[in-house]
Image 1 (cartoon, rainbow, N blue to C red):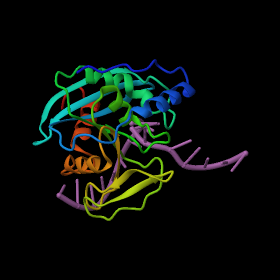
Image 2: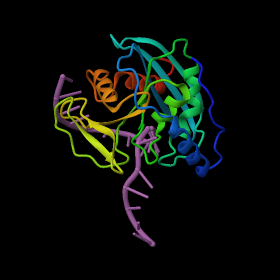
Image 3: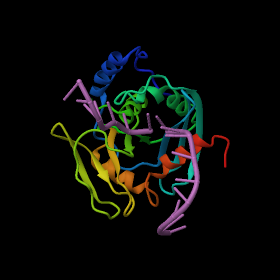
Length: 221
DNA sequence: GCGACAG
DNA sequence: ATCTTGTCGC
C-alpha cells in the first residue's frame, strides 16, 4: 500500500511536538464499525538503534494471516516519552508500503488519543495512511482510571484533562489489563469492541502478537 | 527540587 | 525496548 509523507522530519523535540499539535487536528473519531482485513504492527529493537518493523495482516473473520511484511532500519529519533512515535514511524511506514493488500484497520502497539497531546503513535499512523487505527498499550501513560473487574471484557474509562481518552480493558480473565484508545477514524466504543474481538485467547490482540513475533524472528520459526 | 515517563 | 531464572498454568 502507499503511505503519504505529510510532514518534514523533525530535528528536535520542539519540532516534533509542533508536528503532533498540527496533525492532531486531522484525527477523526468516527468511522467504520466492522473490518475485514486487520493489520497488527510492532517493532523490535537490537543493540543501540537498529530496529525491525513488522506488519501482519489478518482476515478479521478467521484471524488467519493473509500477508506479512518486515523492514529494517534505525531508530529515527531519541526516546522521549510522548515523542516515541518518531523513533519507529519511518521503519513502520516502510513495512506498510511493502504490503500488496491494503488493510481496513491498523492495530498499533502503543497509545492513540491517550497521549499528553492527544496524538500517540496510533493517531500518527492513522493520519499518515488515512486508515482507521487504534492503539493497544501494555502500560498506562496519561490520565486516571479505576482497575476493571477480573473478567474478560471488563473495562473502565481513562480520563485525562476532563476527557475520556481511552479504556483500561481486561482482554483475558485475571490478567493485567491493556489500555485501548482511538487512533484515527474510529470511536472509543468501536476501538474497544475490536480490541476484544481480536483477542480471543491471550492478553494482546492477535494482529499485534503476530507482528511482535515476526519482528523478533523475521526469518521464521 | 524530585520523581515519573507509551516502546 | 533490553539485560535475565525459575516457576506457574494451559
